[in-house]
Length: 269
Image 1 (cartoon, one colour):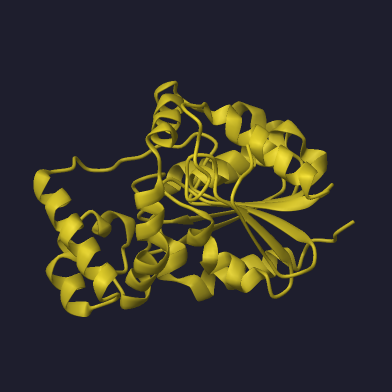
Image 2 (cartoon, one colour):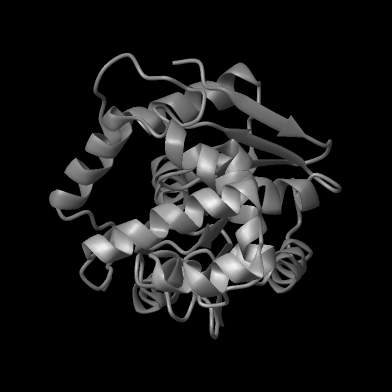
């Protein structure tokens, strides 16, 4: 399948993979910065953004799409960066053929993802809808954050309820949510229901890796990310206090500094 694609910058390529719900646009916090030194390649995964699916599909199809994409761009080697679901796909690509990848960056992701999200109430859904609509109209409005945002499901996605984070929600989050297809949701839920885990296969992974997690993440827990980091042989690990699943939107400067520092340790072929 031909994927909608955003390519920025020049230099060593980094394949950047978004989460669920998500799109290439939701990775702008990374691609706008990294494209100053590298070439960032951010596709809308099948069923997300503008990559519309032709019927139902399985998670395996994402991997085939991405390898076909790299082949079409004549990219023999690159770095991998994945956020949430994107991190799981990046990990799968590396396990398929690690000789193709120079390094791996996992953000709010894990080889055995586990969550501890509290039950969702009708009131949660109501406040989330109102907060999202108001924030789309007036991004980062403190009154909306205090009145609706902190009572909505956004309180689980963001520990730091700041205007900056809400600006990212408005510019990069709303459209991604609205464009996520039912086949994409079905494929993900089927994989999770099957009890996804690649933890036992990580001993085969020998490429340099960086794993970053928010301490208060309830979607993919910090503990599950740490478990992955400690199982990968060549891995640096960072835990960010007072942050949640969308921590790159909460503390972008710190996250990008840590990614830059790790990238500076690599020697590209």
